[in-house]
Amino acid sequence: MRKGYIQVYTGDGKGKTTAALGLALRAAGAGLKVFIGQFIKKRRCSEHKALERFKGLITVKQYGTGFVRKAENREQRAEPKAIEAAEKGFADVKKALLSGQYDMVILDEINIAVHYGLLGANDALKLLDKKPVETELILTGRYADEKLIKKADLVTEMREIKHYFKKGVKARKGIEY
Ligand code: ATP
Ligand code: MG
Image 1 (cartoon, rainbow, N blue to C red):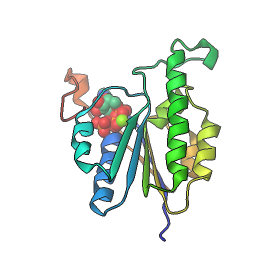
Image 2 (image 1 turned 135 degrees about the vertical axis):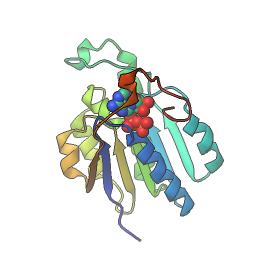
Image 3 (image 1 turned 45 degrees about the horizontal axis):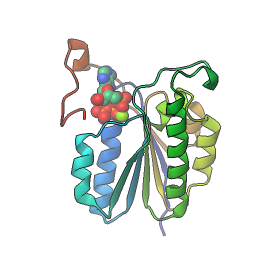
Image 4 (image 1 turned 60 degrees about the vertical axis):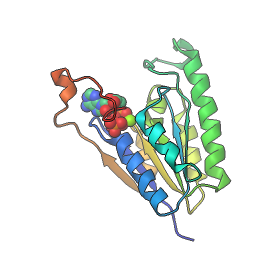
């Protein structure tokens, strides 16, 4: 049995979710089983359609309610449903991770869910501690919590040098979603 590590993809540049999807693709090619849990997002993206071709190897679930705003505390949240969805998602990914059924578990946008107060940083940290030794765990999203960064074995920061969004280029199907 080989050891799995904890990877974090964070920062303000494009490529965090794509990096995780790339890892899933590579893992599936090696016959590894992958679980992808996506926080925040509720939109069906092109990758979901593509991943249907990897049934049995890659499982994807979404737990988002869409865009959320940062709130001072959980009580002030304008989107109580977002907390509910994130908590349900957290319970679900925990089950998937602890089942030991998956060689790779990807928690897409979990950093955002923590940053926006939908999930507790300490709860996320505790989950990292419970990771089965052989499972590779990938966390993505801007504003990764310092505690999670400290715990991880690999941390990559995508730094925006340029982004065409600033020139007014809207998200494109097949490129951004
Ligand atoms: P991708 O899914 O393309 O790999 P990402 O996961 O790095 O991007 P997120 O922070 O999840 O980026 O951003 C959500 C959306 O905003 C995506 O459509 C992404 O392509 C786009 N995006 C990423 N970085 C920037 C940026 N610096 N400015 C504007 N839009 C961005
Ligand atoms: Mg992303």
